[in-house]
Image 1 (cartoon, helix red, strand yellow):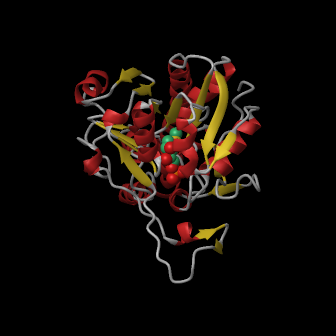
Image 2: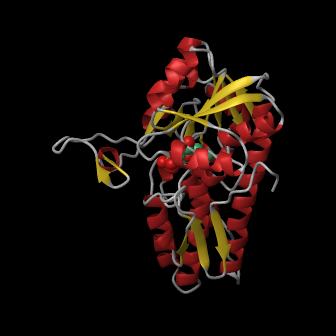
Length: 351
Ligand code: MRU
């Protein structure tokens, strides 16, 4: 690991899967041990581990734990455990993608070892993809630039290095960045708690702002790029990402700020035509009405808590993947890079 990349959210041992507990950061740096696949599914649903690629990697190791419980004697039990993992969160397509890969492993006489090798490969390939995207994305940034990011797309959200934060990490290392701004990202505060912590761990200064301050930041000319990750990119280039991303893209286009999406091919869903068809996760209103477990909203108020939104492709200036860069993404440019070979999530269990 280099000096700007030290955090890892997922750690496999013979005992089970250790997950850095992202609900507790930065106050505590605790790990949660998942001993079976049910533990992993609950950890994904409960946000112990989060971020599209990290969810996929955790689920892959969950499939290994399920194999310990069910294989070779009970393949139906193994399939059922994978279905439960797939259902843990709906929007990030990496989950279905990783489980589909695990299901396609030829199990042979040593199913657990074969599956563990595949989970390690998924994690390793994600890290390599992130480094590649870091180089491709950073090369697009003319120095000296200010950048704004949203949510957490860093090492914590991936196998390491990060997607959008990987580009920022790389651009920082190359001296291209003047300042990194991060939205606090209500209501889970992935920006304030996770992105800020992770950048500071790696000696990259960061300035936080309330989500609502982003258009003013752009208007004042403090940032030249908004750089975000994705939970799913559809065949026409529409992008599902953390709630608030769509508003950033609208403001960026209006104010002449460039908008970059960074995501690996495991986040691309060529089986879904456009963003309308993406299932958007809604979480409990209490997450919105409370802060740090303390109710802050007026008693009796209801809450509406969609945790992702969809940014239409026409608002994206550039989509960076490990396979290359797509300027002004649309269906034809997406098909040219991805064909139709990625996961079809309409098959649910990965069929
Ligand atoms: O709800 P979260 O924290 O899992 O949401 C994460 C995001 O929206 C990220 O931007 C996305 O998964 C890309 S992470 C490389």
